[in-house]
Amino acid sequence: MGRHQALVLVILSLLVFNAILVAISVSLAGNGKGYYVLVQCRDDSSGLERNLTVIHLYEPVTANLSFIHSVHKTPIYDILEVNSTGFYGVEHWTMEFGAGEPDTAEDAGASSWIYNESTGFYIFRGMHRPLGKTLYLPLDVSINMSITFYTGDHKLVFNDRICSRMLVLEVIGAKDK
Image (cartoon, rainbow, N blue to C red; front, top):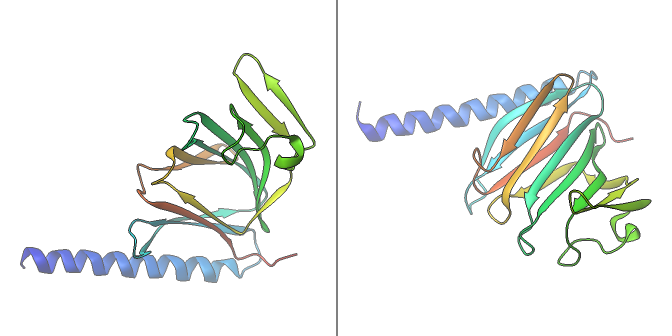
């Protein structure tokens, strides 16, 4: 078998595997037990998607999103709640204002904010900002972006080392309330 034929075989195998993964996750999602987060990678301008995994969750979980701001070049941390209806911002940490960062608690949809002198972060708290059922995380714009899911005793980390352009996270298999 030639090198070209072997490459075509590998690509076809990956496409079939991705199709099976999505079919299984969608069929499992209909069983009414919990919900799923489909994690995909879009690596090129054609929008080609590669399924990375499906996370099966039974209750709300916390996810931490972190990255270096593209303008300020300072770290940003967002604490998210993930449940069967989607993603929600519950806390936001920043070192700067402006350039897309909130100036007030009201701008952030937060009930309050504090300044932590030891870390230099402004922390917006008391948020419940709906972000939708799908998150698009542009890895090619932000620096050192990662999202970490905390599920019981486990943590699942997805970052720019496994996907170069865009990470897509979608809550599937749960009915909207």
